[in-house]
Image (tube, rainbow, N blue to C red; front, side, top):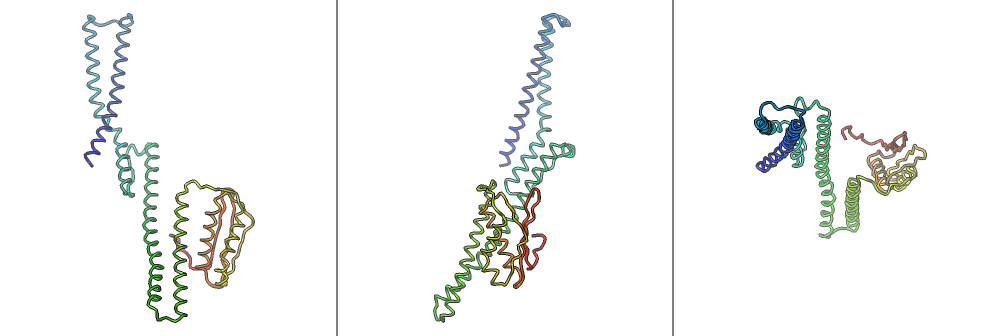
Length: 296
């Protein structure tokens, strides 16, 4: 693999050197032709005899090409260093090393273009690193959350299978199995919705609708839950219109309000407010439960 990489880098150096060499030869040919043209038309006078003078010009051109080729081969590595640095960093990033950061040399790093390139690359690497951490945490937490109801369902199903249970116990275990099954279904739905949102870099089905009415409907959908806990919804907002995907945004409000009910204290209230500024609309859902740590 390393030999192949070195081969590719050498090919890049040859390509760059070849381009510089081509322009060098082209320049020498143009200059030589101009000198010969001027001599033929009497604008320039040759020093010494004609043949010797032309041989001198040809030798000078050959020597210039030879010296230029050597200098090109040596000097071409200098401008290619930043290119190689970018390629190396991109390869490391592609291989999963999200801690990779791009830094140019002491002098080049002061150039505005180099600053912009390194900043963009490093921001990309940081975002990928954070995404990888979130992905790992999500998989771990999700696996645990899925395992818990599955174990419960399997355990109570075994108890039902063994028999020797009263009708009251059977009904209790069936209710638990039903509740855990619904919990699994809800988690699967949330994952599908999350995947749907993540895959939609460009949202479709964007329409204008009444945001206030949508939130009121979501509160009514969860009425059974907040009435069981004797909670009172406090809706502190007027009428607000918004352009968005109505279906996806509805799922957001249901999740937030459901969490406020779930973690709120019994017999208290949860508050929903809407604040509209020139560029955005801020929706706040607050409850009296345990405060979420700032790092989350």
